[in-house]
Amino acid sequence: MSLDRNLTNSVLRNSEIRLPSTPADGGQPTTITRADLADAVARQFGFSRADSKQFVEGVLDEIAAALLRGENVKLAGFGSLNHRTKTARPGRNPRNGEEATISPRRVLSFKPSHIMRQMVREI
Image (cartoon, rainbow, N blue to C red; front, side, top):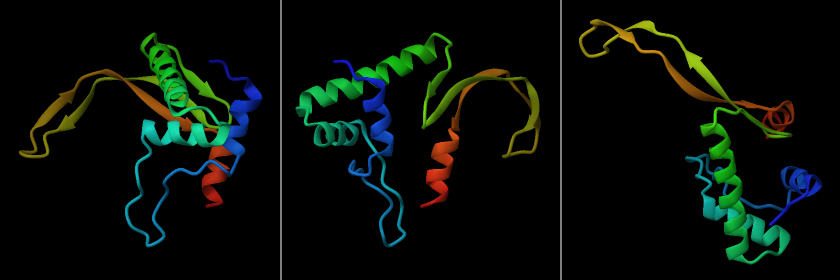
C-alpha cells in the first residue's frame, strides 16, 4: 500500500481525524494505541480496518527498523527521533546515597517540529 506525501501531510492538518484525547473533566489523558490509529485511518480514508491496520503496522515497523539500523527518523510537520549517546557520569544510589557510576548508553530522543510545538501551544 503506498501513500503519497500530500496525503501524509493532510493527516497532520486534517481536524476530522478523531483520536481519544484528554477528558474534559481534566482527568488523566488517554493513551493512543495502534488500534486507535488504524481506526482513524480507516474512518478518514475509507480503507477497510484490516488494510488500515496493515498500513499502521507497516509504518511503525519501518520507523522501528530505521532506528535499529542507527538512522534518525524525521517526520515533516511532526518531529524527529534521534539517537543520542550519553557518556558515563557520576550518580548516586537514591536508597543509600552511595556514589555510583552511570554507564554510557545510547538513547532515543524526540524533538517535535516547530509546527507541532505551535499546535500544542494553541490547545
